[in-house]
Image 1 (spheres, rainbow, N blue to C red):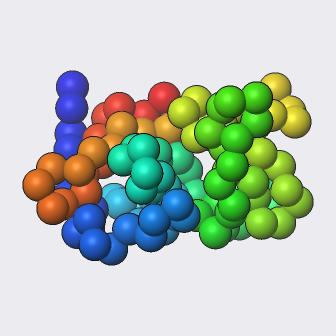
Image 2 (cartoon, rainbow, N blue to C red):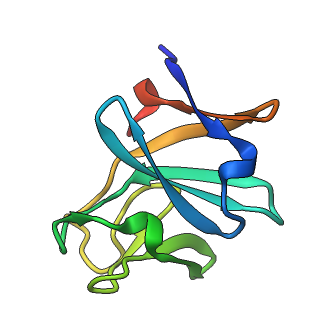
Length: 112
């Protein structure tokens, strides 16, 4: 079941960077890759640093997989799957996110 929630205006996104949104008491990191016109949404909480900072991480890729590097201890998380590259036992929730007109929407029921 889909449950799309209006998050923000597309103009609020930072190209090739992340922003944090509070969505129904969850801190969600939303990343916008402008050239590819792709959005990714994951939990903003860094399970190693124990603080919500992943939206401030650097975006890059590891072996062709888009990832964010935590600004604290530099752990890398796959933006598509939420999987930590350094520790297979750690994975973040990911969310479906889309641009609908000029608005950004997140599907909270699409968490994986």
